Length: 321
Ligand code: SF4
Image (cartoon, protein in one colour):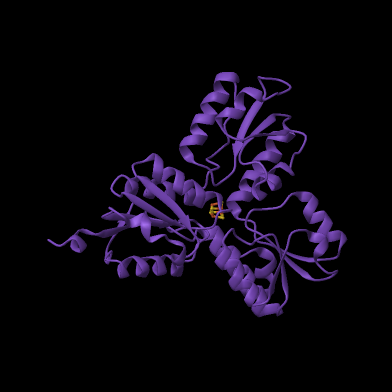
């Protein structure tokens, strides 16, 4: 057997686009077709360099703040969700809004509103400064305290230790979140759980798939952008579950050939905001270097789909199924 014939790629499934990202990207594409350019988008529609660049080329204008959008224009809110104050600001500027917030983020917003209405202190596990965390916190700023991992637990201050609930960002590490919740429960034994998992199905499934793959690969390449929380988590999970090395790359050209030294099995996956064409380019890059054999490892079947935002459906006269 030659050295090359031993080389192979394990390709994780599911990987790439989740239902929320697919819906958000389609929202901007359809808005561009239906209303014409420019379409303004508040923040990156999804956290992926390539997706944002492609939409920009088609006429989307990405802004950081609502006030940058000209009066009366159309603005799309990103998949990560916005605080109620952002909707109010858009109304004040007479903007036409299309809300592409992922329904699974909206679910967490509703949980925050419900716990706040019952006057709970809400411990939101998430990463400081992440857009989703900012949006969720904006639903109940007087009730929410951010807990950025297990090390933050000791410093948490609440009004009544018997009236405390936890929620989380949708794209965290499942294992680290369990560790954080365990520590929180040691401090607050009456801690109330969310009605269902906040870490979304796509984040969980991609982590399950990468765990299975990393146990059999020396190197794991995760396609995704550095500001994509779920992509960064995949790198960490791969390293924690058996890969000697794991790297995040936006494009195949960012792979360093030195990473392949002494490696026979490479695992490949991608974050929830990554189009599969970028994964295919990585596979082609690897094939050129002797890693042409690809075995897809399916861990969890995935069939989730979300209807387009209602603001858009109305204009397209689509009835949700
Ligand atoms: S990663 Fe999860 S929460 Fe985020 S857009 Fe995708 S499905 Fe929605």
